[in-house]
Length: 313
Length: 127
Image (tube, rainbow over all chains, first blue to last red; front, side, top):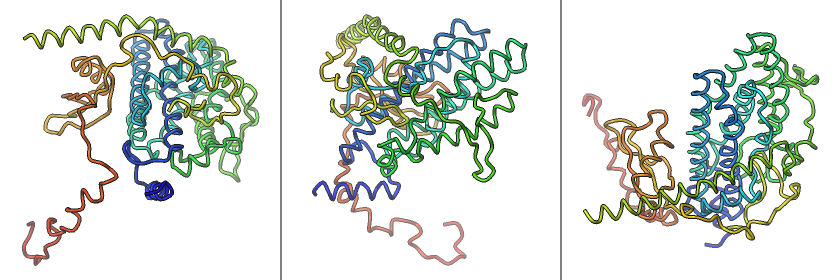
């Protein structure tokens, strides 16, 4: 069979909502796009542990500390589900991690912003995880089987993340004047970066069209962003807080909220590595890898020893 | 595979817009040290007594014991399992998807294997 026929059969499968599995034939570009997207998603989970890790030892109570620990552990798990899914496409774990450490592979830029107060843990849960969930719910129906299955598992666990975040903000919003101010300040700082998580406008996003045709993505960046704004504009009322956008207004004709323009300069700047914490995040990952070397060595040595003992017995 | 990866994040960022060290991977030395190359294991979990073990994913570990412990932490944080199997991925043999048509063909035309093939009078209840 020639490549043309194979591509035709492949597209027919996609159109017929049949999932693509690791050993199935797929166009090179489909493989590449999935490797890039899944690995970036995995890196986002792993790097995403860092801003929250900052607050584990500073959580205001034992309960909050236990919750935050569980959430960060989930994120490590999500990274691992995704790395596994990525490996089924023929790239090794080592290469994937190497690409993160070298700065070649990206992760979500949102994690290059600092976490300044406890309220940031709430805003991250509500807004950052909320934005991620929009994307991830869509991805449970993505065309590549292992990615879709990883997403189903992740989505089941994510909803606790968003709810605990909102609850943190809710408690602060009913607290003292200082706590209320802290809550509003965190929302102010995280709102725009959260909107940026959906990526450039559809008109700017060159790969969106092909990804839609292959059903890697099912909704465009702008569609997802609009859904997110509509959702948050309502939820913020429950907190009695404001989203930092004077253009935010319900549009009766469109049945959607209108909202202001994102600062795309800031967006590209952070993507290019000039965000407040880009260097700090990558340094932390590299350090963890280097300082973990003795653990990996010890585990390998122990495995060998155990094997030798079993063979002797 | 190495030159395939492009800078991107899970929104959608085209390559040409992203400055920096785009094509550096091939120049990077591989990650050093032992443990970068632990074997891959497939994980199967029995979600409750009486059900089959079901494939849930894979992970890296130095040996079987470590694979089982890692599988517990990665795949059963919310009591999703009562039993775990792990097997090194290299020992899994699979049918070839490209030959799935011929391979499963013998079952296709044997509709008489299904109970609905047989037309029985209504009086024969629940057979």
